[in-house]
Image (tube, rainbow, N blue to C red):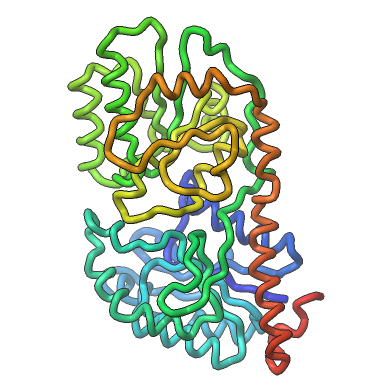
Length: 387
């Protein structure tokens, strides 16, 4: 079987989404599927559509390049047909428009399975502070029409239908080969180190943690709590808000901004830290249920963590702390009390989510397509699914 994983952006080595996509491709291959990755790239202002490491289409530079990379999909369809692709897995970039609709319609007409992953749903509130509001407006006009041509929508939410199309509910996964477990528990008798890893948006709610630290340090406690923030801010406004809280409350010694980190440096920071900070503000973007990558990475690393949404994979785990989805400052003493009553090893935490491997999650997609072929045996394009 052959699959094409289609994205509408490029990659960055330290970006969590970039890592996730490569994990998913690797998982499809581990399930016996020859998988090719189609994505966008740019070199010295020249825009390209790439197929693995080869150039599929050269769009040139300037306005032409910017337009073509968004609307030219004939090269993608030609590749799909020429190479007898059986399954097209699209990662949505909230870019439903006449051009993406035309591509999906042609794929379906050719008898090829096509599914689309919507990483976060609902997503309209994510654009409240974004410069991409025009893109969202276009997406709103066409997303129902796009969805009706899909076999299914892949979601990490609890929605059984999205835009009128049935969903396949899976979890964000983990590539255990790429994420090491924490080796040793630190001595936390005098201090504790918290870690939050994200491209920082307003819905991550780290400001709630900063305000909690401000309240905690008002009383000049002997026990020290440090917060390590790993990742860049999505926009200058986010950074200004955080820096204002830090400066006004004299938190400079206790809040460390590391910027983007990956590889060995990220591993070392996780060894230093004891407790993970998940999303504390998903309610701000209208999200109640979500299965975030970050929660899974914390668990795979073997550290306990806190979050405020509903994540069904973790709700009953003894190593997670839940706080209400509101705007209240985090009570740091509650974190300390929770942490001190834990009696679980990093390896035990990691082993509790073995079923969340990307291999298992992507197999669910393949199994679902198999079911569709049994219902509709005239679809010969995936006749070799089990081979």
